[in-house]
Every structure is written in structure tokens, then in C-alpha cells.
Length: 539
Image 1 (cartoon, helix red, strand yellow):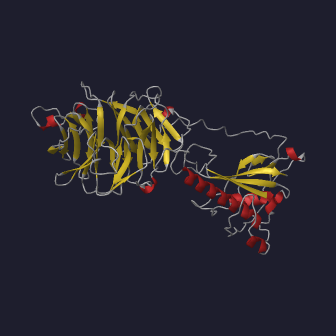
Image 2 (image 1 turned 135 degrees about the vertical axis):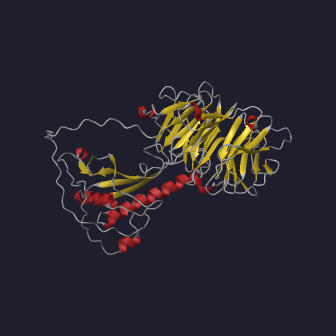
Image 3 (image 1 turned 90 degrees about the vertical axis):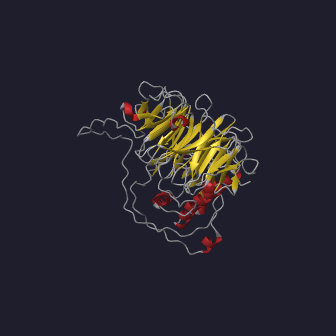
């Protein structure tokens, strides 16, 4: 069994994502509903957009061509009797190939894969081979770079139709790595890998000859990919759906809020959309669920998603027809201009800090890892004393103002932040190379060095933090959390080493590493969690 997924696709249940659901009113007016005039559209099961911007809509009754206009002729149903239109009934899946041909899954008088040309005219159809009385109901269609059609079926595994019209079957009787014959989702990524979601987990193949099975024990209900090599899927485990995208997981809350995800989509900005009990949008730390109580999207049963060339999102529903969403924010009214004259009253207790002209501090090149509490390496102790460097001019004044009070009430200012004994602040301007302790910005450490020299009796604790840890039930939890812990230790040691090289005594610095155990925000990958913090231990 292959445990590691290509391109770092997340492989286990990751943490319960504690998020605040943000409902933005500016998105509430940008849904628009479409239905044929004087006709019920029915249950929309699938929708696709071709290279010409035409929408192709499959329902539980008919198949439609929709140009997206407001005129009645915009909807063209395939409903002519005694023609090939009669094949296009009970449409369950649609895919468009590179030539503009439409491939339509039909569940009418047997299961068929029907080919239409770019204009939507019938070309031919391919009946699914019927054997062992299994249900061949088509759950999804994916077309690879060679033009082969890969079909997910409800009970008979994965089928592939080659360019000569020949069917090949892959199921549990022929492929050990396929965990179940109940295939609910299928997609092809930019490297031509086929991702297959079953009710018992995930598997993949490049060409059908070699398969990989992943350590994900759950019902995969939807898979989507994009041209940037992203792979996203939704897996439901113990009635809790979770959306995985590469190394991030987006938890969908309880059953009453968002049920099984039927379809996923990644738009061109990398935002993830999920169709289910409403419509969900995932972007960095934000999650929005559109439903009747907060928008004019009236459906509670979204079924399918498609993206057009204008970045509009088309949403098929089981109960309320077809919708279009313009995801761009609505422009808000500009605020009233500020008055030309503003009188400011200064506080008598505070004085403005006067910046001192400074010069640049040369960055030390030492890369020695230090233990906690910080101990200077022997080679550094044996080296010649480092001359006290000059200082780099910084935007934020770093002059320390110390009140002539008792030790416990002493207040200092660093990077514009007041700090007392025992208080913790986040240091600004300290940045490292990705997955490395190498500093790429010295503004923050220069300011910290000046603070330590201006306060020669102060001792501090520096703490390092990284991206958020995965959940404890993640199969690689121990490995990932230890990597994050080690990285945070190396980074905070690098800052301490910079101070020592600048003339600060090593016994004034204590370092601690927390890895990803104390995130500031819920996202699993954000600069907001990658930080160095400082606490005053004594003055």
C-alpha cells in the first residue's frame, strides 16, 4: 500500500479546524437563477462549460444546451421524439474534451456514454458492457491527455473507453489496489494521473497498468484538479465531511450545517468551492457558506459546479434549477473624505520617541544550532570577539523608554510595542527562507539587538513558532510535528546567535521551540503562524 501521495496530497484526517464562519453581505446579491421559460428544469445532476462558453446541463429527465442569454431561445432541450434526442435522458455526468466534443453519461434504457460534437450534434454512443448484474450508473467522467475516457460507476468499478471504442474494466477482482467497486468520483490532473474516489478510500493510476492505494479510510464523494497541479477531494468519515487540498484540510462542520459534498471546484485564483448543503467557499483562513438565510442562493441541495471563461461559477441544484455566481466582490461606497484640518491633542503622559540615526549591522554568517536554554558553541567562544556593530536605520523608532519605577512596572518600547516583565510580543521583520533557519531580512533582528544593548540588564526568552500541526490522528503526526518543532528551534537559535555575535551575553537569552502547537490562526499554512516571539524575563 502506498502511503505517500504524489505532490503532497494530504493523507489522513487532519485537525478539527476551528474557524469562524464569516458571512459577507456583499456576496448575497450576486447569485442569479436560470430556468427555461414555462418549463421546470428538474433535478440538475451535472453541468459543464465548453470552450465556446456554452453551458451543457444534465437533469434527471432531459439534456439542455444553454447559451446563458436571457431570451427564451437560450435554452435548447434535446426533446425531439423519434430522434437520437431520446438517448439523452437521465443525464448523470458530462465532460468536454480538447476538441470540444461532449461526452454524456445517460441512464436510459441501459447505461451509455454518448458523444456529441462541438456544436452539440449526435456522433455516436457506446453502451456499457452489462455483466454480473451490476449497476453501471455513471457517477463521473474524466478525459486524459490521450483522449481516453475514464468512467466512475456506482457498482462496477472504473471503466476506460479508448480511442478505438473499446472498453476496459478495473475493479476489485482485477486490481488489488482498488478498495471498492463503488466509485463516486474521478478526475485527471495536469500530470495525467487519474484519481479515483470510492466509498472506502482513494486510489490512483497513470495508465491503468499500475495502481496506488492511499491510507485514507473513508467515503470520497468528490475530486477536482486544476492546471496548477492542485488536487482536492472531499472525504466523509463518521458523517463528518472534510475537504483536502494538497497539504491543507478544510473541515465542514456538523451534519446540520453542511452535508455530503457532491462536487468540488478550484477557480483560477485558487479558491475552493464545494457544492452540498448550500455552497461553500474556502479561501486562506476564511470559509463562507451561502444558503437561504444569508444570501439569495435559495437551494439547500447544490449538486454540481462548473467554471466558465469569465470566471463565473455555475451551480446546479437538486431543488432550484441553475444558478450563476459572480465571485468578484461588489464595490462598496467610498467613505466620506476626511476634513482638511484635524486638530490632534497629545497625551501629557506620553512623549514622542526621537529616532536615532543608525547604520547597517552586518549579518553574521554563523549557522550553528544551539540547545535550549541557549548555549554558545565552543567554536564561537574560541573565536575572536565580535566588534559591536553599527545599526541599520529602521522605519519604526526603537529607542527604549524606561519608566523610573519598580522593576515589575518598568515599561520599554520596541518596534512600537510596549512591553513589561512577563509580557509576550511578536517581533516584526524577522523572516526566514522556506524550510530553513537562514534569515532573509535583518530589520527585526537589528531592532532586537539595539533593544538588548540599550537595556544591558534585561534578559529575554525567544520562542519559535511554525505552521500549525496536523491533528493527532494524522498518520504522520509524529513526524510532521517533530519537523516543525526542530525547524522552530533552529530559527529561534539563529536569532539568538545573531544577538550573541552582536555583543549580547549568552546568559541573557533563553530560547524555546513550540513548532506548530500554538497557532495564531486556524489555517495550516500561513505566515501569521510563522513567527518569533519575545518575553522579558527580568530587567
